[in-house]
Image 1 (cartoon, one colour):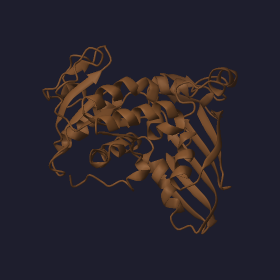
Image 2: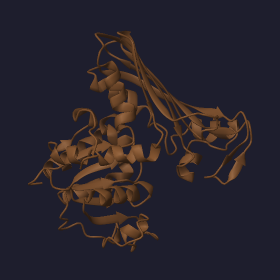
Image 3: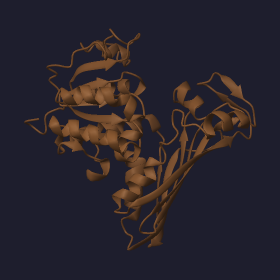
Image 4: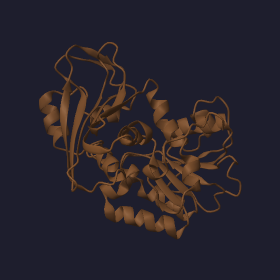
Length: 341
């Protein structure tokens, strides 16, 4: 942009829950949305204002992402809110970057593409540089997982190991995510369908310690992730699944990640994604450092969905101003608020 203070001009690619959230935030801030795309279906042909629940038209109609033209987009950045898998999102990345747009993606693998698929990461980086644009994955874990871990190590003169723990409430998530974490399954079903299969979320949590360790300057030599069921100790009515889950069924899963580095520093993470069924429980992310000095950072997420998507929204200006190619959130510095925007 010629004026760094001018409102960014957005394209939204993926008009589900988080794409609609971006529409509401952008409208609140006065940031123009110049186009919106989605897979073929009922959302195509609708005005984004009505679709996002604003009760008024914004004059932007959702287009079929496979049929639409991407030429002449007068925008600064494309916001991709589709899946957690960069391979599935790649056509969106390519279309937007070749149209001259920076890309910011809400998705687990996008936050550290090199750790997931080095060959595809190289292709994304090549396309971005060829078109003089930036690609960044952010939102889902930027502040609460990645930067919280980095900040916890700030005072350290010595680091021996890192430990990360989180509890994420999946009750407000889609039915597909709940089923992907085994919610409502028996233990035998979980072992068959979730523990040994990647599914919709398998492999994602392994990325977090790898990115934090890499950003701290360590060389990750080995990492692993296993998935364990979290069991209900009393009945729980799940609104998303529209049924009561009996005690003894799965409330979701726990991803247990272990990582080692060439320098000897290790990281362990226990990340639970499940329905919250214990009185007084609050979503949280915690990092603890065994070193000198020992330190701990805990973040409680009382407005989880808003925190997740606002973390992407608040990085938009960073991505637009960044050099071409893949730029990680760890290269931007801690996130800044947009309260005065």
